Image (cartoon, rainbow, N blue to C red):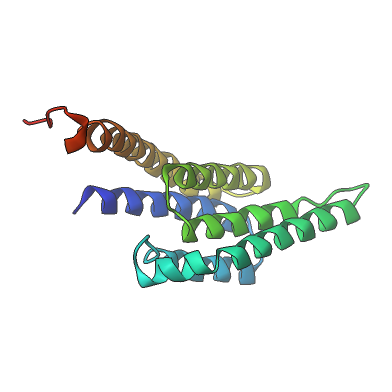
Length: 177
């Protein structure tokens, strides 16, 4: 398996385990989980230079408007629930942003944002957990996130040191074994 595919697979497993921790609490509605469950596998094929990637690039303005609309709706729902604030719209926002970032993984920055969203989902799962089922998702998240972050670091180092510093026009020698 190629390095990029392994890194992508571990990233998706990390997101899946984070969503699993929140889903185990029962606090997330089934339609939202179904929507994220549909976007996740479809986003696997969205890469720069592919037909799906070009489609997402053309729809960026619509996706940004949709993200801003979801943010406004979530803030309105939280403000409306005062003086006893209901934070479930914030959880829905984080789930939406996770799906949004899965569709737009173009750079290292996007991967980091996806990892932060996954961590926030695990924090929400820990806050809402009432049973032992959370422990299974949390253990999976810890193991997979460790591997994902190691592979992310390696990918960044490879891109920074080998691909950039050893370009033919840079006048340096390529690394040989």
